[in-house]
Length: 508
Picture 1 (cartoon, one colour):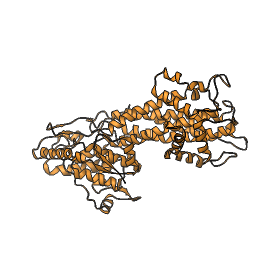
Picture 2 (tube, rainbow, N blue to C red):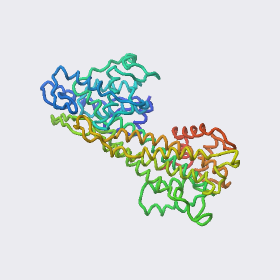
Picture 3 (cartoon, helix red, strand yellow):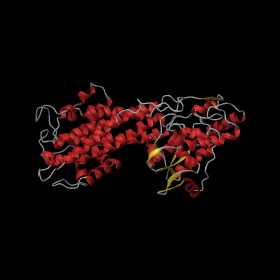
Picture 4 (cartoon, one colour):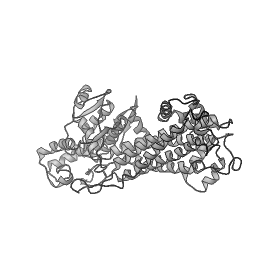
């Protein structure tokens, strides 16, 4: 089994996904323990000295002005978790829960949180033993961190609530005992340290960002197939055009589509069949490229956040200082994940317009709705309906969450990020986009079947054969839902992209 040692400072997106997909065993780097121990010891010293420090010897939020007695400190930490575990809605997917657990450990081992190594080890043991807390999707304001969902994670560590273990939903205590683990008794600062962070919104957004990078390649492949089926004018792909605008994503998309369509006899030159294409074809590099640039920006923000310390208060042991601050505020990621959702939704917007051009006989030279037996057969008519429905839903979901704020905790927390909503919306948009792209792959292949019988491009031929080796041409109407889901599976497994890249080299 592959082994990942985390340090708190150099976690990559690929490593997060490997842990999320249960591919690696995770351990804390030995060099982190000195920092962890020093921070935990300093918290105990503060308690012994009866220092007034937020969340350690005081209540939380609006209760920060209430000092608790020594015998109340541990009770307060446990009660914090129980009272805050009030999320609702469907449960987070297992891979996202695993990413949440990993990211929380990675933040806490940096030594600014005052948590014991034994408590961190229990969370890591749960991850490695595949004890997955049941975490509801809804209930976080994205600051102070993801309080409600992370509390559900900690409940399992306390042997309370329920978890997923070996394919079943079981009481958390039962799962811990099955693995020889003892529930934690939280001491000063530990409850707050475990839940006062942005790891739920970051985990959802990180998974979405990783998948978005693959969707960018799928969009270029699907777009190139449609480009050939509609005999696109290749002059618009000329690198000179894109170089003088200077946008990196645009230049990359133009190069990708040029490589995919290399040696094609289906593409045309301007004036040969038509002077210029519609925007969804002619501006394909500009549209896809803008989304590429946006998603690269979000990826950079994600890489910062997965290695960040985001709880409160922060403990600076060397300076013997505890600072109450706002690193838990999700605004940097809320804006980023709203941007991510918008960038993804545009991939589907353009894809649906290309699908429409393929099925609409007034916009192409192809048979109406890509069937030669119209009337008794509807062909791909409703495939476009489904794509349009998903695109419309995405337009609703793309409304930014970060522009909203509802004060909480007696107006002590008077501006919140709604970053977890932004991340969740982006994830829903991603799922819709991959279905639209799956429909375009199928529609483009059908268009190629019914169009000019000329040589396809080097990459397009491979993509077309990939589709046809798995899904036959639609001669007469048949049940199409399984075809769409089969195409979605190629996107999820990345097998289509890998097959095309094997033929033409890595897409950028």
